[in-house]
Image (cartoon, rainbow, N blue to C red; front, side):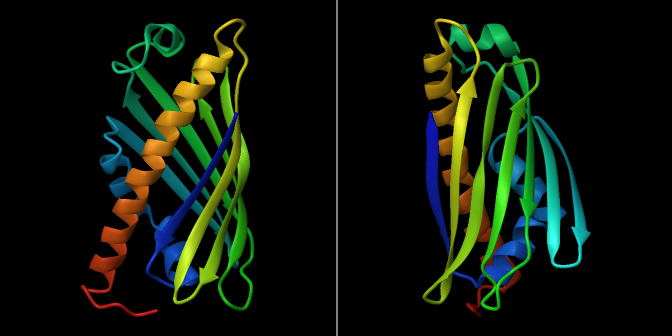
Length: 171
C-alpha cells in the first residue's frame, strides 16, 4: 500500500532541513505524537545528514489483529537520509520505518522543495505487511496511523519554526 503526503512549511528549505535534523525538534515531534519514550541521533557529513529516531508508542488503540504482533507497546524505528541540497536549498532523501516485533515496513523517498516562499516536504513510501490473510488490513491500519502522525508532525513543525523565528516570518 502506498503512502503519499505533502507537508507545507512557511520557511525556506534550509530552515526546514535544519529543523528536521535538530534533536530538540525530534523530541518535540515525539511528544506531539504521544510517544512514551524516544531516542534520536543525527549524523552529519558535510551537507548530508542521517536521522535515526526510535519512538515507543502505546498499542492500546490498535485493532486486536494488529496488537497481537506488537503487544501493548510498539517501537517504531525511523531512519531518514538527506542528500546534498540544490542551490535553492531543495534536497532529496529517503525514509525507512520498521516496527520491532512486527513484519511491517515502510520504505520510500522524501524531498524538500522550494515552492514560492515556503517549502513542501513530499513523502512517498510503500507500506508492506508480510502477514498472511490480514496483511492488507494491517497495511491500512499502519497507513492511517502514519498519515495521522505526519499531519501532527506538520503542525509541530509549523509551531517550531514560528518559535525559532520569534514569531517573525523570515524566508
